[in-house]
Image 1 (cartoon, helix red, strand yellow):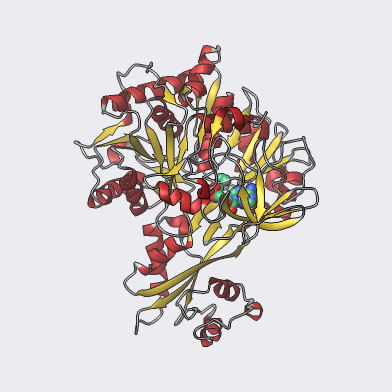
Image 2 (cartoon, protein in one colour):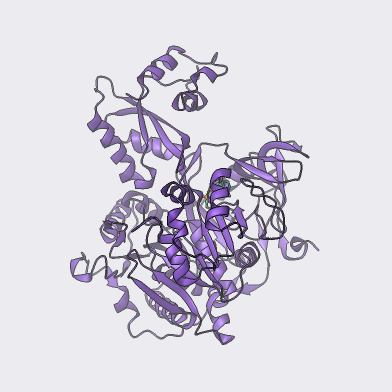
Length: 608
Ligand code: WT7
């Protein structure tokens, strides 16, 4: 039986009518109940749920399933007391403390829709996301230490709320979690009528809170993600299908059983932290490490020291982290036993075979399978991935589809390609954790994902299929770049650059970067008469940091008196990519360029 025959209804073909994906119609559930209460009812309340590992190796804490449940319930009760109801959006802007997944679970418990904004986003980016979903409540923290750097999260959150108000949306309540070791109460700015300390909010609340049973397709959360055009989209995931899928993939892809110690280094601000930290592993009943810090602080052996400390069985990280640890040298790995490790996961970007082998041979001592999981914010869970020990691995290939997933490769005329082929990676039938809509814009959902190749969901990636049917992801085919596993729209960076009063025009492309996978390469044309200067270069980078966040800061600013454009004014990014990588002798057909002289001009200005 195909699981969709019985439990789902969907149309994936825009030519046949609107796209609505539904799973488990008529059923009701609650994901927080299944992630927490179910284990407690089975007598596992005393099992450790979260092993919190702070930025400093000396900072650590534990919470059992019962303790997490109780804190979730207290917060649920407080949120209800503030008038948060089923279907209301709640924004969350927090660092990696246990209270972050707790806040998400509390929303889920009462049927509220959480919108987590990664703590590295700027005030402006936060404001846009708060205003778009009209969140009444924001949860944040007083501050955080990241490596040696102290980040004033509350200050950024305050600014975000202020900017959201300017966009016409007032946040009524800000719940502030005190991160004592980074930013104690006494040092934190506090707005009496709007702010409440988390501790005070939950004090006196009951440790029991009734579960809001929701229909299977009730929205669980929104998560904003970048596309090739326009503002970030609020990807909406539903409850039932997402729950079944994140549970199933956690169990089979990580070979995870109840009680296993599992560690995913992703931040809850991204989809990986939603599906493979907050939800999937808790549904399985794992004990997980929640890590506040960065993999290289205080030293390049931090990850392996933590693996040994907690006896981690499954470890899940991004190729960018693997590459930077590989560069530090294998002695940092060898200092630690790592004999608890069973499965090593990779996510977020293609893993190059060299990094794959290092991960496999050095970190895993050649005995742990690598699960190179291909998926996206939109897919909610793993789509193409090895199953550990079940089938032959190939370094650099995400291998084969997960149960029920039907990938296809299509050409630009929408023909399905068979056998050995390379094309656009699409999905042919709905899977349970497929995004249901784009928040507030169902039209955009259909045009973005279903209109480009009618009959299919289009991923935005290209891929190759080899003679064994294995898939090799070749990367994005649209104007999205993937920097250290963070997805960034070139259009967003361009608009942040153009916001600078001295910038007339900007064009951004990705280029191969040894650690980050891709780096951001920005061509900038200044206003007439404005001289180029190092100071201006710094100001332009700062403009991107302030508009999006530090992780989107361009690596290179290339001064461009003119940009290569077609006669109709379209920027030829293909040409810009070649110039960035010094491959201008492979430009291909440039006969459509309005002014072919700009190419030489740009080549001369490279590195200046
Ligand atoms: C894009 C999605 C998936 C959660 C984190 C990123 C790239 C992701 C792989 C992989 C090759 C990968 C794709 C995809 N990507 N995993 N294993 N091999 N590429 O989620 O921010 O939505 O980004 O990341 O290009 O489209 P995201």
